[in-house]
Image (cartoon, rainbow, N blue to C red; front, side, top):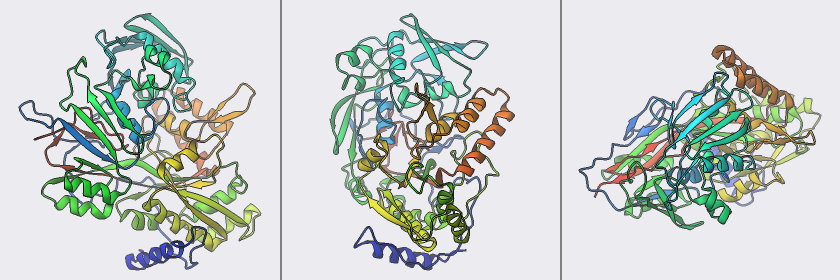
Length: 553
């Protein structure tokens, strides 16, 4: 077992050694080896959480009470900026929370059961071959400008999604969208897809107004049929939303919701304690006890499916060598990262899909922290110690701590790691830039809407007309592998549940041999909030549902 004091001293020395120069290497003192878990369980909470946990991992605040007087405005302090209001233009957590306020999808996911339930579509039928879906759209559905939301808008949205790098994978199997009449639309797939309905609940499939998008291609996508409409958006500062009183199922209990950006966790907490905000998203783990002991505040916690991982850009020199990638996998001291970067409130993760997803392989091979094996893999690569230097991008203190631990381990096997600290928006910009001008990063994904989507989005690629493969939207490792794609396609249409599970086991084994990323850990969703908060669904993917949020006077 690691000694907490020894590890604390090591991290302190590492931080000190990089405080003057981000290009410097850390010390070469070897850290003790860490035991690794296979399929990581949910981490254990240190404090008692407010709210009611569901079987699916969400936490519900108390229900809204019609007899209670609620405040006109609720202000939510967020850690990452809202930087795109087009549902097909981004899949970040902050943006997704907005899309759930302003837009609707054909279907939703029940937070209690994880089953698909009606949303904009009141009902649907599926053909015997599983390829034709007939949806009935709510006849009284309107956009927040009062114009009708019809089957024509559904067709427009799905056709437009074909051109979006963030949405195209969700509609890749859609061959036609046919408007039957204003309230009926038929969507035909090229083949059965066991995850398709689940994917249609993703925020990226929010229904857009054809009229608004045609008249204004930039701002038109901001208009949805949700419970709120955009009031003001100041990037880097805040965005506000006002209640749509014409919503067909009745208005929300709160008139106005504000998302306000505080980049520093300590500043967000101070804002909560002083009353500047009502909700503090993602406070520092060192401040959780202060929140839990404050009689005016509630601490909400739920195990998350936000998987911290390190993508390795597989077309960069050195990283195109599988043995180099495996060497770095063996050099990732996950247990030390859990302790030092997350104060122990996290759990080692070794799989390539998220905790709780269908088909997670309980017997996956584990790249345990082992510097001798790392050295062996480096020797097999043909590179000599000292020949390789890679830059790793990080955007917050916990990731910086994790990167420093990794840097120290890599120095001991002869790979130089250079930290590049940057703002979250800049890091995301580099990852999303078509130039793919990066080598390593510490990043996270929260895909949990379906195993096929997670694997296809994170590791898959799409064939182009010229026969080449183009990486899919969130494929940060730039993996392009036809065999992997074929394995995914076969699993997707498999109707036998046990065989499909085995197919995903084999897919994970295949990924493990290629080693395109290093999965590290999952941790906790932490939220500080004023007492009296009601109506929120706190979700393990960090895309929280604030549509019914209310704060008592």
